[in-house]
Amino acid sequence: MKLSQEHLEAVGRRRRIIFQDDVLATRAFRKGDISPERWNRIVDFYMSRLDAAPNQIDSVWHEWGEGNTAVWPSEVIPQTANRFPDWWDIGIDPVLELLDETRKRGREVFFSYRINGSDNDDLFDPPHDFKDPVPHKAEHPDWLIQKWHAYWNFEIEAVRALKLAILREVAAQYDYDGISIDFARVPLLFPEGRQWECRNLLTDFVRDVRATILDIGVQRGRPYLLAARIPEDLSGCHFDGIDAETWVEEGLVDILVVGARTAQADIPAFRKLTSDTHVRIYPSWDDHHSSDGYRHPSLNVWRGVCANWWRHEPDGMHTFNLMSPSPETHRALEIDIARRHRGGPDDEIDIEAAWELQRHVFSEIGAAETLEGIDKVFYVERRGGGHGEDFVPNPDNWYTPRHAYFQTNMRASLPVRLHDDGSSDALLVLDVADDVNRVSESIDHLSLQVAFSCSDGESPGPEFVDGMEVEVRVNNLCLDAPHQIAQPPTALNAHFTEWLEFPVLPSQLAVGENLVGIRLASKSEALTEPIRVEKVELHVRYKR
Image 1 (spheres, rainbow, N blue to C red):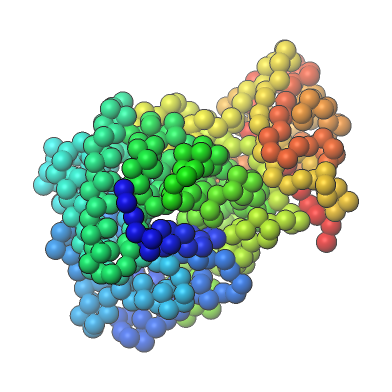
Image 2 (cartoon, rainbow, N blue to C red):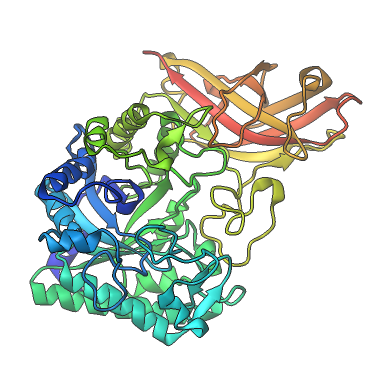
């Protein structure tokens, strides 16, 4: 596909961080009076994330709901009956106004569209039982895939035509810099077990979207870019019916955002795929639906994940569900805090802590250089979890989902059962971006922390420490004897009480992949249940 020089230059804009803002997930639009004065406070609320300095956010992607009910004046799909028509009546279109306010702050702005949303917004979507389709879908039962909710079946030509019409309307109505098709929400595109057979239908759809918004770009006199958020590796794309290779080969997209809730985005594979093309690559991390056991991850986990990604030279980072407002603008709106901002052992609200963590993330992860020499946690990923069990099975009740690969983390290594007879190691790969050998004089603390449970996911109990001996090797080097530690509980994560901390020397680690072997050297008769490794974390702390 021949693209103009202006288009290629637009694709090449700097995007250290792409901030995807799930606009309706906060409470700003859900209550309060409809007035110009309140609108000004809403603007302050949303723009506080961009106005905080320093930050590395260069691109903002607004996502406006589940995608089947419009919060903009639409002639294609039903409009929401709540709140937004009242804003329009006083001359304020929130979609347009937030676009303009973001652009005033020098940021690129995309419209991010949930290609197959769940219609689970109890205010802006029509009232319905979640297992049932919204009225718009109920009119066409033969267009649907019925799982725990009714999703569009993209095998149906009329469904693809409907989605194309929605994106055409948005692109023509609003002067965004680009459109992003979010295949993470929800990646049930075709009947399960047939996804890859249907790949050409999805590719035809992307071709049509590409041609449509290119034409709109020509009409308005500046490029309209196209992005897609897709699974974290090519095999996952194939599983879900996404032919990323053809999309890149034909130049159907400008930006690929890879992954959602996994630290294992296969950036090298996508780099190889897009070499000698104009396509840019951005790994994505979801703060709310993160890897199992890392929901609302600590700052040090954020740093470790992104530092590992920067080793493979992506074009920037993409964040999702990290969108706390400043405490001041939050209080000014007199609204309840969104559930995704909660945390701590009692699930308490701490908007100040969430804001402080977010400020660090947005000022650090946008470049490898700003992540150098600061504390990190590198971890081995857990499969499943992070969503409802209908969509993603939990690690303790794992099975291979057939309906989707995206967001399941199905290839993750943990949890893993240890052999009772000590005959072999549980082998795990731990990625470590930091060259701790080169900066060993700057290291204050370096340890491998390992969490254990019984086979049913429960704590082994007080007899655990005295009842077993565990041998841990890193790169076939046996670590010194451990001691027991405790990690603070959190209501938002799988919590394990039995942790062992092994001291690690910088010389025992390599930059990149490190092979960790964990072996049950001995086990007392009192421990009758099989032992599992639940978490493995390398903690790196630098001297201040």
